[in-house]
Image (cartoon, rainbow, N blue to C red; front, side, top):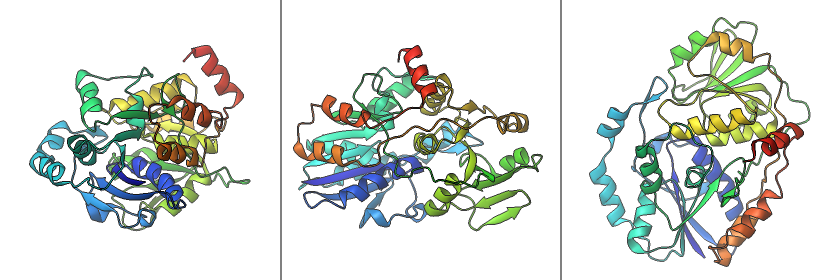
Length: 355
């Protein structure tokens, strides 16, 4: 089978999910895959070796400013004409299937050329009745038409009795994490604003990753790092907790490692608001609606989360894709959810909330 795999490159979460899939697909001799990434300048991708000879296109992306989606700049920066041109010129001949992670060029090209397509993404989960917050008519239309596919397989922290998969998380908790620092990943916030929030908390070490940082920089108890997969994963393993935006993949990794979470959802981004809603209902995070030193100080005394065990091997998913009976999502979902283990407190919450 020859697969075209389209990935939204705006956020690192989509790429992190694709990395797990790429590593597993590379072990197979019954499938070949070509990856396409859009939504980010080519030079801003990093740690991409696992994807082989991947392609990049402009696509569509969202512009943020001071922790909010800048709708005007998003609209004015969008090169709609080039996007349509890329869709029209994209050659899908020779492929048997498109796997799509909220990527518009390959999704519309597949639709135009009648190539079978499957969404495997967190965004696809919002096609179903799952907890949502702040979703407008525009959001619902965006989720439906931004990257349309024939079949939607959502990815979420619970199945909600829908065609939803658990996340694949490769990293397992280590025996003796140092827990000397708090990991901070707020890529949509300004560096000076983050620095100002953390500066008074001099008794706590903070390891801050930000795409605008090009080299490590120490500012007393605040340590700035450029984005790097290996450095980030080590810092995450040894952290005492995580302060982050409401992206799905980092929260999933932190949950598997049992790290406490302080989440600042991106204003105007209903997906992140919905993620916070679900985590709050399960008592798995505290919320930071604006950069506030007092809220961070209070959260530092919060206990760790109970770890959730998610599957780390997508082989069952790959077998299902190759088999070709794509309408039967239930058997796949049931098999993967049997691999998930919740802590007692989280399991009781799920039962009491009757999701």
